[in-house]
Image 1: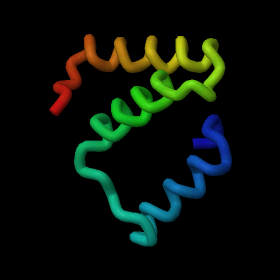
Image 2: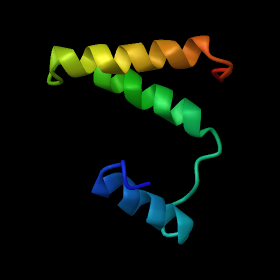
Image 3: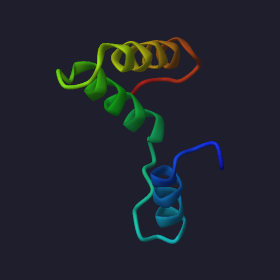
Image 4: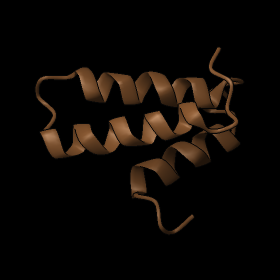
Length: 66
C-alpha cells in the first residue's frame, strides 16, 4: 500500500470505514477514468499515452468490460 500516493491511501481508508461507498465494478470505474484522462485536453501527452496503454492492456486482459 505504501507504493501508492497519499490521496489513494486516504480514499482506501474512507472506503474501508464506509465513509465512501464501495464500487462493485471497480475496474469499469478505472476504465472510465482512464478514458477521461486520455480525452482531456489539459492532460500532458505523456500521461495520456500511459493512460491509453494501461486501458488497452486492461481491455486485452481477462477483464470483461461491462
